[in-house]
Image 1 (cartoon, rainbow, N blue to C red):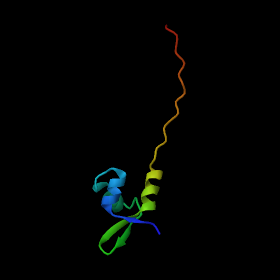
Image 2: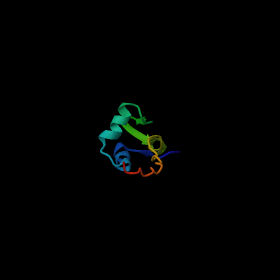
Image 3: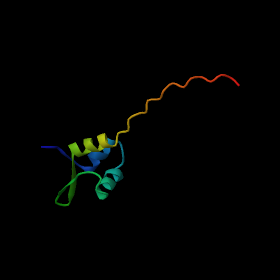
Image 4: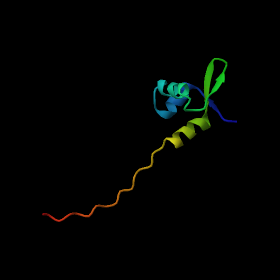
Length: 69
């Protein structure tokens, strides 16, 4: 079973304030579990969010120097 994280723990893992994970929950952009009135986020959902939003760097080809005009 996945470990369930609090909003504060998710914020610490993402290096953000608590408003960001709360917004992700409100916009339903991340999986969450309601435990009574508490909200918990599975650890795998945080990892999946990070993977899905990771941007790979572009590989830039070297540009040949142009001769002076």
